[in-house]
Image (cartoon, rainbow, N blue to C red):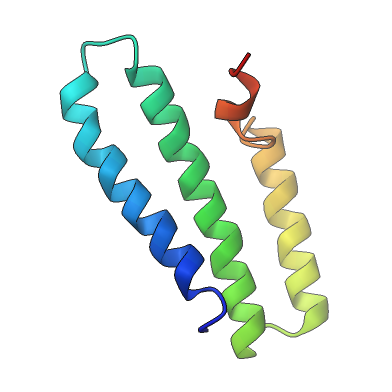
Length: 90
């Protein structure tokens, strides 16, 4: 869906940048921040993909809300919401 395309493109571009950065900071204290941000982007991508499914009509409103709720609960249970990198900022 065109409405989500810029956000999806931005998420993918940042994921690619971070994956390229991993090799450069693997032995650095920065590695935890890079991995944390990458995980955030992967989770954000899951939510954007759900939104896209709703916008293109793959999911109706009820199914979309149920899927959002399920994804949010699962992410929260394993510590992915709120985003880990936001918790580590001071």
